[in-house]
Amino acid sequence: MRWLWTPAWIARHVAMVVLVVGFLGLGWWQVSRATAGNSISWGYAVEWPVFAGFVVYVWWREVRLARRKAAAATEPPGDPADAPAADAAPAAAAGSRPAVRRPVRVARVRAASGPVEDTELAAYNDYLSWLNANPGARPGDYPG
Image (cartoon, rainbow, N blue to C red; front, side, top):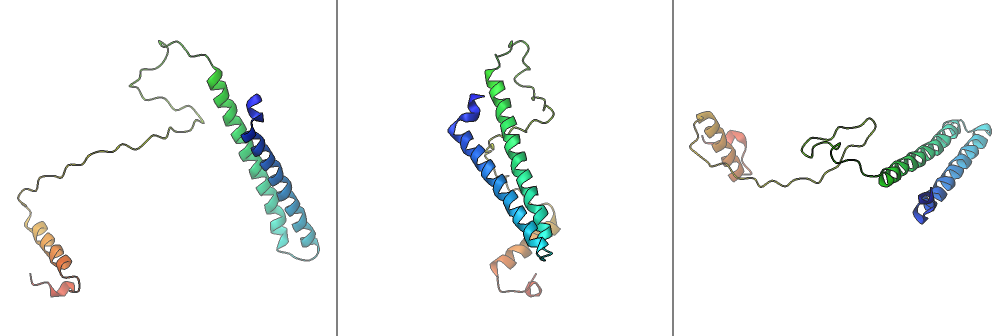
């Protein structure tokens, strides 16, 4: 549990406490405004505690994730014979996050331009190239 008291985690704990106390205080302020006659404040009086609950949920989830990572780091490596094959795709455990991998760059080779066999496609491509060459022209001006 020492990893919960590193400077980064202390900052997270302090931020969580400050946000929760602040959000609950804002909720109480909205309740006092609502009882004074501001009917819109009733919605905000409910909204601010929900924000506080969300902060607690995110903090709790991050603590759980860090505990899992710490447990996995201290776990002794298993027998290599029991490990799945390297070429097999790893099975996704329930609740696990998908692995994010770096994109693969693939060199693309242009297809060799051979004779066009489709006359309609060739006519359409001629029409598009004429429109591109004459940017101010309307489609009805095409001479073909």
